[in-house]
Length: 398
Image 1 (spheres, helix red, strand yellow):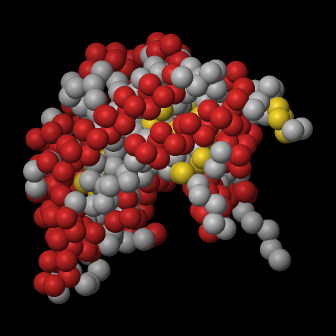
Image 2 (image 1 turned 120 degrees about the horizontal axis):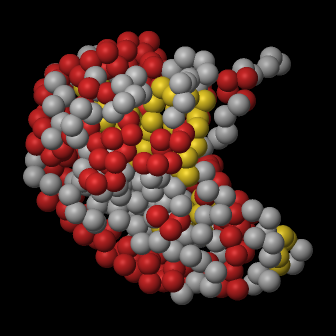
């Protein structure tokens, strides 16, 4: 048996997918597990989008390999969406459609990073950012937003982290895992720090753009002088409940878009043809179904906020977007039950999975070992039941 590469052994398994797999194993054994660990809408893909895929199949025109960077009419629709909704002027040839926003980000890192290049990662961060940077032989530099500032990194913190090796900055807004949303004023201060450093690219993950309870979404690329150095990442999984369709995209400076297209051409080629036709329908239709989903998330957010405040030892921030809570649970570290000691939040999540049959994710995977992530993309009944069971299990710890 041969040895695996240092490249693959140096990165961890995705914590969200690992917990989801454990929960699935328990379900297969007949155990009723409520999964609050994965970032997946519990809604079905809207019917009109489904119909777009069915129509594309029936047309029998979309069975051949699509262009590597996506069908031109879809890229034109994305270009129009960027202008209409975000104030971003990306031409169709500056857009690359990929197999989910995850591949979009991986393409960019592989395209721009050389060994030793640094990427500033606003922390807490989505689990895969650091692994992708490491796979591209870059170095993640974590800058941690404070609980008191709703986990948001300040412009001053960013300025202190920049070195001559800094190649890029990456963050999400609305943020996975915290639900925090950067305001226009906060983004402008970040832009002020970056303007004197034209060689630093900005990668902004806006996949939760539509699930925003704080007002209008702002893209940093829309601010003065930022478009030519900003990669705006988005997709269809969250706002359109299209996780399994695997359609993500970037708008980027031409040199990065061409490089991402080259990278994708060697790895996967173009995204699924039928998924792209469904995505075109999603972008070409009114957002009524999306807005209905967002309203449901808003109601669940209020419910979960009230329920979590009743859990002893949980410190809770009110998220302004996405569909997660990220409570600080450090008060449970060091506690035990029946000889089982809770030494980390990871231990706490395993305990809650085994005792309460609730699947959560440790905050350590997102860069904050004092927190855990709870997804409220679940029914209100499941949310009430899950938090009640969690509260019962936590009460056993002393």
